[in-house]
Length: 131
Length: 497
Ligand SMILES: Cc1cc2nc3c(=O)[nH]c(=O)nc-3n(C[C@H](O)[C@H](O)[C@H](O)COP(=O)(O)O)c2cc1C
Ligand code: SF4
Ligand code: SF4
Image (cartoon, rainbow over the protein chains, first blue to last red):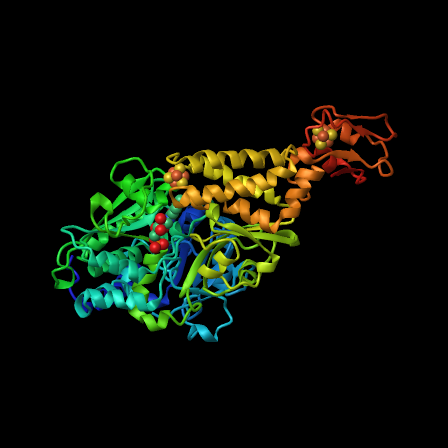
């Protein structure tokens, strides 16, 4: 591991991350993969987020869908845990609430595969700062 | 959701995520994801382009005030610590988070641990400290795990350790575990606890900035306070101080809970009104009941009412309204909540959590609790209300630490805002909201009763008598007020008053 010594090193790591993601997803370009984040704070996990994440990883693989599933912190929607964010290539990310395994299955079949709209989407209700 | 909406002024969204910027966005166990979102750039900039005093000046100019409850200006605190010279100084992160129902700090640590580590290193640079300590309750295992992973990764990348960014600045961070006592969130108590002593507060001054951990100058800040630091330094004080109100800059994270539809974490600019938080973000009251009160500031805070709904939330406004910002718990209550019981709930907590060092808090709060308990049982007297108030004021004035100095606030604010409800308990022996079981009676409305006997069959204690097809009667001496009969009766013949 090379240590970070300058601001330029930080910039380099940024790019490294991108190529690592590409590698991980087995694709030429991770931009082509569906990206899924599972809210795994304490309350997410307590509501079953871990099972949902395991299911997603397995099911997406079995169904031959190119996807990167990762964990993230609490998204803030305690009333709708577990929550997952799904971003299809070239699309805005969509957050689904109350995701159990049944719903995760539906999300794969309907939203990811067919692009159909589904119930239980949590609208974006905050602004982010540009980094 | 991560799309940039092009400047916060133009959006209709009430929330702005600064402290929660990365929370729910990055994988907290992968330092590269933090770096990909410009993580550690602020530290690099500080170390290579700024003098310690420049960093302090920037934080001062940002107007950032402590998010742990008191709202002390963060830049000023750093400056004081920087001016106290010693061979060793310490940077401490207060992750005790003891308010019932609060989980802002836990969420930040679980979702974005590097932001806190980076901020602590920046603080260390500004005040001349090389050691950081995170005091975290052992009841937060996931936050602890992610902090450990983050510290390990930061060390691997040379972002913690020796000669950071090829300068002479060394900084490393360790964890210290607390056993989950509320009083250990108080900074002097926290420091004693870290030293292996009893978690009891001592009189300030000396402040930790002068004599803190192991007697050395120590800066204590809250998790959320730190989480704001890297962004302020990246985007500049003049960006940050445009958000918020005149005296409270930036945003505040609240754990919205209670009788609102959308419970969860919210982060709003200072100056947002309670109404906007409860109705627009929180989606309003559950089951379309009537709003009654909102409790902010946890056991140190108070209950605000309808008339405060349009008050812009900031440190000073909440204080003026008889509550306080606190660390960010926000509990919404509806018409079914009894305000005497709410006060009793918080006093029960305080009595449990008082360290017992000083008598006003140890004994006074217990007496307050007993008075409230009597009132909720219908055994209170009118003079008890004055007694409650007097005792509250004495406890506030004479307690040693912030716990005792604020613990009567829930009593005082409910007395101020819901005096009629107290009166109903002591003079009519009634609880208007129907929450105090001891003050309720179940009885049968004769006109509605058809004598179906359903209630008599469901009563667990045989309190209901009556012949088939004749009006039934509930014996109040036997009734344990379980409510089963009321639920069972199909003819609305049983009511509670
Ligand atoms: C009884 C009591 C409990 C406290 N609990 C906490 C806590 O859990 N977390 C916290 O950050 N500050 C807590 N504080 C405030 C701390 O003493 C201290 O003011 C704070 O950590 C300073 O950080 P800040 O300036 O960033 O807010 C508590 C204070 C009192 C009196
Ligand atoms: S006010 Fe209460 S918690 Fe604080 S020192 Fe006194 S007894 Fe302990
Ligand atoms: S409230 Fe419960 S105990 Fe009282 S009469 Fe009804 S069923 Fe019996």
